[in-house]
Image (tube, rainbow, N blue to C red):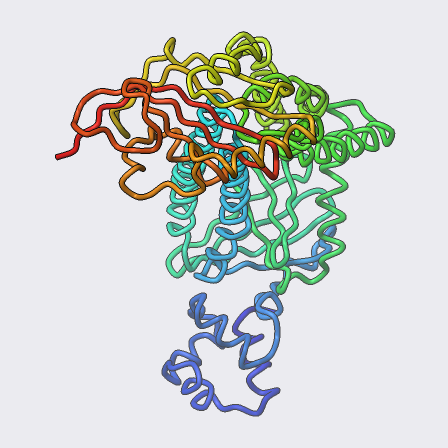
Length: 492
């Protein structure tokens, strides 16, 4: 039955005259008559309206006599309208862009996580590196996928308002592509199809680098169409790869393992930091030497990204998606190795010579506890910036006292001494270097000793350059901060 006869039959079935049907579609009665006598055909938009009025699928209206020929199994239709183009964009680009953005955000968050939890200055650049890589990946994925999306949508827009009719036979699909001004046909054999993708509303198949879409809503028999397409794809892959069911099961296992290791690899740095945190001893949490001495344990997280790399190469060999495992695996493995190597690189940056305490005692003429752990960093070897203040730091020491009785006795002495103060008045804060100013709030008692003038906790009488020793003591944790520095004081 031709299209015109179908229109006439369905119009009569719902008791509409040509004039009444014409009004519903916004065309003339003569136009309806031309359709029903097969002199002209409705446009894609008019076909959609007819299908809604008659309450029948578009492909039922488009049935033609040759479909009864030998081998015909089923038919389907897709209208390349705005709805289809939007669905195609979502299926092939929007979701992938979201995945890429998610991956980039994970890198950025990992970088922020690293910086926030950093107690060692050298960690910060690596956190910044992750943020830069994340931002670069974010921009790159948006630009690249945006360009590809634009290219595909331009191709689709060229075929806008075309109707693609699919006629399924035993060995091939007969495709009729019809627009308002032209009709063309193409026969595609199932064994020449490269890929089948099933989405919520459409079935896509790839042939000669072009995706064809079949609207499930207008497909006579979805399961039959999928069986035909997928069975041929499977047979094709079996012939090319010479692999059977066991190979498919193996590939499925590799795919699952690759996904699991990829997810675990995403959390490599947080896991490595958790391992590191478990090795941290109680004490002065500002002490960077504790980080340096124990950060090597992060190497125990290395097997996770290495597994991702190995599975990435295995997946590549069997033809499964592998890039994300390799890229993330190498990034995380490199990061773990770099972090772990800090123990070797920076272990000689700190001195643990406790006799330095005796030197400070002699300068401030106040006894300090005899039992404890000290980490002294020689800042005089560094290239120091004067952006924050005009101070030049010589040494920074982090001290943790161990003996409880000695801590209690020392705390009593501090509380009774006129040398120690529990509050730094505003004018005296001008004598603090930036490192002392950042950390003094973590301590209960303080000394600002002017080595040049041998005075305690008081501004010098005139502007100039002075040597200072800052001591901060926390009696709850039994910790102390000692900083030796030179500072330019301006009283103007």
